[in-house]
Length: 273
Image 1 (cartoon, rainbow, N blue to C red):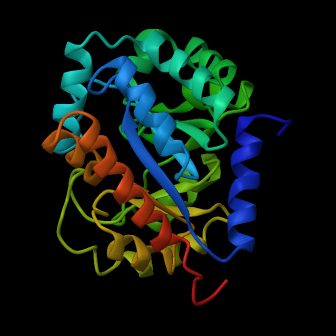
Image 2: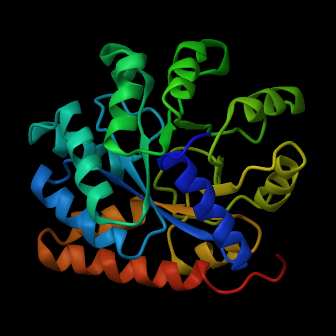
């Protein structure tokens, strides 16, 4: 793959692996609570995160729990448009070192046009996209467009998938594999799935890509635990809840405090390389 934001993401994970730690990936919806405030918060989070996952607000977020649903609804009410995603990417790419991924559902991409969406993402500086509701059987138009524009496609893989299906998904993947840390929608605050370490180990037999875990990591101790066997730890709802519970600057400061704690957790040296 030629020099691109996707190649930068590959180099980032290679560097992090040499440091024997995990990457911290932070999910945040563009436009929450307003476009201007989200850009300011993303700039602040980028100083701590290795990877930023920019969420594209969508009216039917099937994988998301109440926290992200409320945040994306607020962004849409405040006037979010798809063009704001690309402008936010451009501004972040110009001023931060964090790798940039986009998390979106398929319908906004389909309406915009897969080829056009991929071209805009690449031009704006994204390393790739996560589209959790796009099944492998229907993914060819997107995969072709993503490859043409040197974008990674990061799949969200289900623990109950067959070995054959997981293998086929991994062959189309790039950048990293996204493994759910708990069953259900985002925002889970209970314990991590007891089978998560074994699932990560299973994925490692199918791909050499980094394995990142998210959906259900809500505190520093869970992030530290996951960092012992995963290459990346993804957190979103726990940070957003801080801002929702205390709107304004104090809520952002609280979210940043949590981000710093999470970073310390995932950056402790792992027990094995």
